[in-house]
Amino acid sequence: MIRLPGLIDPHVHLREPGATHKEDFDSGTAAALAGGFTAVLAMPNTQPPLTNSASLAQAQAAAKDKARCDYGIYLGAGVDNAASAAECAPLVCGLKMYLDQTYGPLRLDELATLGDHVARWPVDRPMAVHAEGRSLAAILFLAALHARPLHVCHVSREVEITLIRAAKEKGIQVTCEVTPHHLFLTENDLPQLGEGRGEVRPRLATAADQDALWANLEVIDCFATDHAPHTLAEKDGENPPPGFPGLETALGLYLNAVHEGRMTFDDLIARTHTNPRRIFGLPDQTETFVEVDPDALWEVQATQMYTRCGWTPFEGLQLRGRVRRVTLRDRLAFADDQVLAPPGFGVNLAPVTQTENQ
Ligand code: NCD
Ligand code: ZN
Ligand code: ZN
Ligand code: ZN
Image (cartoon, rainbow, N blue to C red):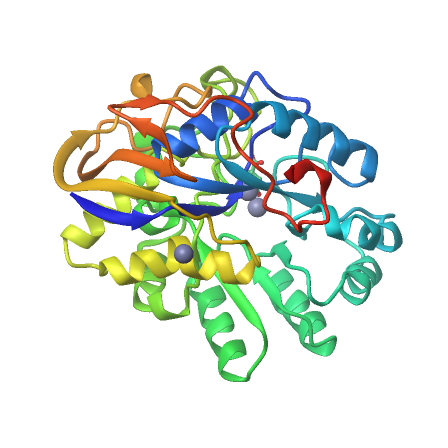
């Protein structure tokens, strides 16, 4: 048995408020614990989106009652909340800006709006962006102009990881994350996945893009699942929404890659614990660790999962390396395939000025 620190996932969609038939703070954090994650940062593209203190309070109340592992919640950057956003900064783990088409209503098109958010969001609080291709170049330039750190979500293409490498070499304060699906799947998997189930943003990329991610592992600060559950009926229906679940397959995929010699345990711990904790300024979770059996062989099966969405793009895959027990703040939270931490056990890891933390 090998012991890892509690994994931190800086990018999950728990769908609450508004779409709890896909997931909620209970099922999503159960999935997190089953996957070896003891902290998750929840995205604001909910219904309503989390762009003001009222919607934020709704999500915080649900999380406080239902979360089984620790969490933070992002504020969403909207077209008209650049001024008021800063007031919410002490309550959230960061600001999320969407620059490209994806699931949900949050999308910023105007350069002036982007500039406003970059200028006004507190420079010492995290700012995360969905920015592909040219959008990435635009937001990197704005962040550099304002000398404010930027975290780039789900980098998927060679041209993007190359740009981030170059920005880092120039001393620009940029960090980034890559998802397991972009590390382990490509567009060549689309025929087998099927049209609707293969929908995800950023799209699955080419084998050359995937190779570039692995070749630039040192540029990748974090692994993030971008756990984005949609039900099978939605994925197989008309207008399938983009997004893959990922919390319960990520660590198995990473451990399998360690077994195959594609990265080391230290590479894994840096990207799933140390770096996300530093980038998002999260407090250390004391007496928190994950016990894994690095040799256990298992087959990915959606029917065995805690996520509510009912499917996985990795169905049937054989992996080596499995979570056995998770201890969170000295309490056994997961063991023998059972989630033991009850709803409400999770605490908000966002800045401690928050009453939610008591
Ligand atoms: C995400 C979702 O479903 O909320 N979908 C996705 O394809 N990644 C949105 C996002 O992260 O862009
Ligand atoms: Zn995104
Ligand atoms: Zn996402
Ligand atoms: Zn630690």
